[in-house]
Length: 69
Image (tube, rainbow, N blue to C red):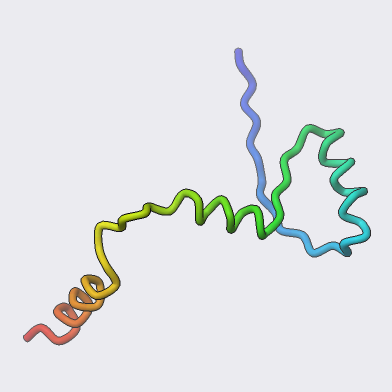
């Protein structure tokens, strides 16, 4: 039987002077950590370069649904 591990994502506000200590603890337990900036960079890198709809297309759809008679 293979054991599965569930994970819990958390966001912590800690003093920058304590970050090194927390990183050491994270590494010892084999956990993963990412800063807010790293998460944002990862999100930006995975966004499509050519979205299916433009902002104008979206606004036209909203107007059509809102003002349809």
